[in-house]
Structures are given as structure tokens and as C-alpha cells.
Length: 215
Image (cartoon, rainbow, N blue to C red):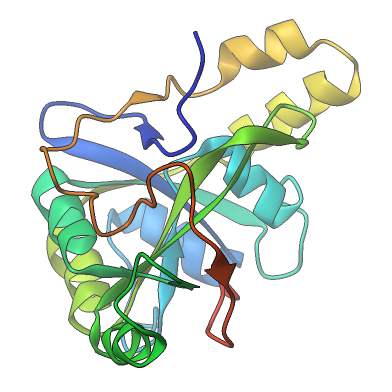
């Protein structure tokens, strides 16, 4: 089945959606143990969440990069996820999609969330021709994520290592069977209209704006 260029794929239930983040053990282990982020987790900075397990593996180098040695599966409420999407702004300006650069930039600084669509990855972390959602949360969104939306936190570092070992051994079929079952995520009509540029895409102009620099 052909994948649309923009679609959220995630492990989800009727009430929750699972996203991934990677942290140093000092943050990740207490979060998984207690089922919530510890006080040391900075609620006043932007944090990026990813519904794609393999994109998290790409971002963290299979959980080997410094400061990303613990990968967490964070189950959050669908209501919180929808709120973040509804209040998000694209992280880049698109001519013909946004009214003008000034209004986009103003909205970018005001919005509590921002969205990037980056190429999804396969088991060998090669880019695929369709996109994966990256959702950045700041301000009230970051605080709500940590203290209101989070339902459960699970340490999936061992799973990441197991999948990686199978990939390195050349057994991608077995590795694929271990992956979280990410399926098309149902979004209400219109929820992503301000975040998806309909094809044919108009010219994209990149401005200097924050990109995911923290896991």
C-alpha cells in the first residue's frame, strides 16, 4: 500500500498515543521507574517527541549517542496530543501556504508547539519517501506533557538494542517483528490542515529557526 507523504503513524489505543524520547540514564531511569518525569526534567525548555520508533533510533544512533543512552516510550493522552497539534506551527516558512514570512515567524514564536515532517526511516535507518512527525513542545505544552498528559513511561532501551543486534546480523525480518506496531493515527478532519502542505507543494523557504536539538 502506497504511503501518503504526510501521515502520523503511531502505536495507539482508543485513549492514548505512544511517543519516543531518549535521555541520559539520570533522567530516563527515574522517569521509567516512577512513570513520570522527575523534577530534574526541565519543564521550561523545548522538548521533541516522536511517534516513530525507527526515527528515534535514527536520532539517537540506536541509543548510542551521548546523553541519549536510555530510550523511553511515553504514553500520552490523545486529548493532549490533539491539543498540541491544534496549537502547533510549522517549523519552516512555506511561500503560498503561510500569508507571509512575518506572520509565520510571529506565530512560530507564540505557538506552544511546532511541527517538522522529516523522512521516515527503515530498519537500516535509510530515508523513506514519506514523512514522519516530529512534535516540539515548549512553555505550557511542555509542562502539560510532563505533568498532565503522560499516562505511562516505559524504558525500551533493551528492545532497541535487541532490534539493532538483529539488524547488524542481517536478520531484518526478525527485527521487524519486534518493532512496535505503528499504524495510521486517526486525526479529526481539519486537525492537520495548518501543518500539511498539500501537493503539489509550493516553494519552501527555510529561515533560521530552531530544529530538534534535544531528544
